Figure 1 (cartoon, one colour):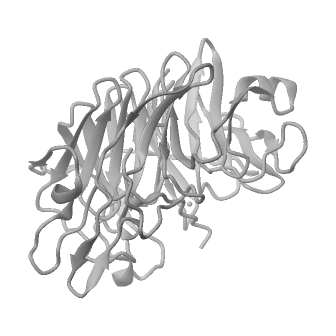
Figure 2 (figure 1 turned 45 degrees about the vertical axis):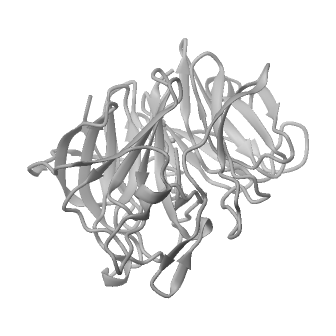
Length: 378
C-alpha cells in the first residue's frame, strides 16, 4: 500500500489523514487543537492536545519549477480528485459518484458507483478518495454515511468490465459516525468516530472525546486512540466549543501506519503513528494565523508520498482577498519524522494538490481557472 493523499477538509479543524461556490468543503470537528487566544496570545492547542507540540523554524524560500498539464474534457470541476499512474479519479456527485479518466489519452474511462437504493448503489458518499494500489490493481474505500457502510471499490476491475465492481462491504455500528477513514496495510482501516449522527461535525455540548478507531472487515474494531480533550475555551466575549474549532486536510502513509493533518487555521501539522500511538505536532514559527473562524489562511491541501508530505499554505485571509476563493502559493515539504525539508514559492495560486505515486508527479490545480500543472517530486 502507499502513502497517499486526500485532501480532506475536516472542521475542527480536527485530528488525522493519505491519498471542493463549486468549492465544497467537507468537514469534521475535533477540538484537540488550535486557536490563539486573541487577548493573551496563547494557543489553546497546547491546552487541549494530548500530545507534544514543537516549533520549527521556517526555511529559505525556493522557486518550484512545473509544467502545464491538460485535463480530460469530460471532467467537471476537480473538487475532490486523486491520481495514480496517470489515471484521474474525480468525485462528481451526480447520477454516478465518480468518474475515471486518462491523463494520457484525455478521455473518460467511465462513471461508477450509482446513486440510489438498489443493489450495489449508495446514497450519500463522502467525497474522499484514498487510492490503494496493490499487485497491479487499483482500489479505493468509499464511505456512505447514510447507510453506515464502507465498500471496497475495485477501480481496475470497474474500468475493465465497464461497470461498478465492489469487492467488499463493511457495515459500521449504527452509533458510529465515521469520518474520515483511511486504508492501512494488511486490510486494516482507521476512522474517526465523532459519536454524533452527523459524520461531519461534533455537537456543541459534547463531553466525550472522539475516538480514532482501528478495524478490519473480519474482526471489526480492534483498537482506538484519543487525541484531544473536548473542552470549551473563552475567547474574549465568546466561547469556543469543540464544534467551533478548526478544520484540517489529511493524508496517510499506509506503509508506516501514520497519518498527517495539516491545519486550516493554524500553521501546524500533526502526526499520528497508529502503531505506537505516538502523536506529535510541528508548528511553523513566524507564520500568520487567523483569529476568525470564517476564513482559511493556513493549510489548504495536503498529499503524501512514501517519503514526504506536501502541504499547500495560503496565508491569505478570505475577507481580504479579491476573490471569494482561497489563494495559496506556498508549498511546505515535510518528511514523516516531522522535519521541514523545503519551502517553495509557486508561480501561480492553486487550491488543490494531487500526488501520482506511480510516476512521482505532484499535481497542482486551480479551481477558478480550472488549470492544472505538475512537477516531478520524490
